[in-house]
Image 1 (cartoon, rainbow, N blue to C red):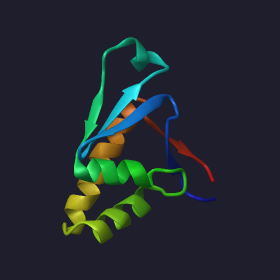
Image 2: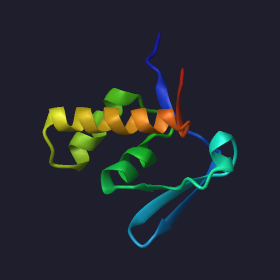
Image 3: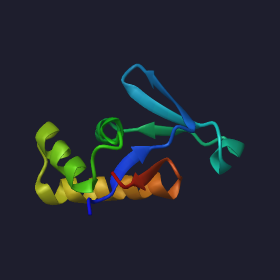
Image 4: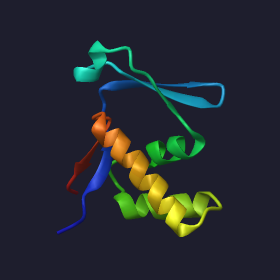
Length: 96
């Protein structure tokens, strides 16, 4: 059995303004709020990689290749960010 892959929800609008990426939910429970999410540089990178083909470990590996950070920092930041995205329903696990 393969490990779950992470996939972005299609229920939002993604916009880049200057060097920042913003996510605005358009359907679901968050669409009834005025929540908008601004992503950090690392968050933007993780978000772009969460295309349904990678699991958590692959995202950690990608962060390690892209940024000059220690392994424990990459693990903590990816886990925290993915946890926040899941809590808001912006990302889900799929079996591939």
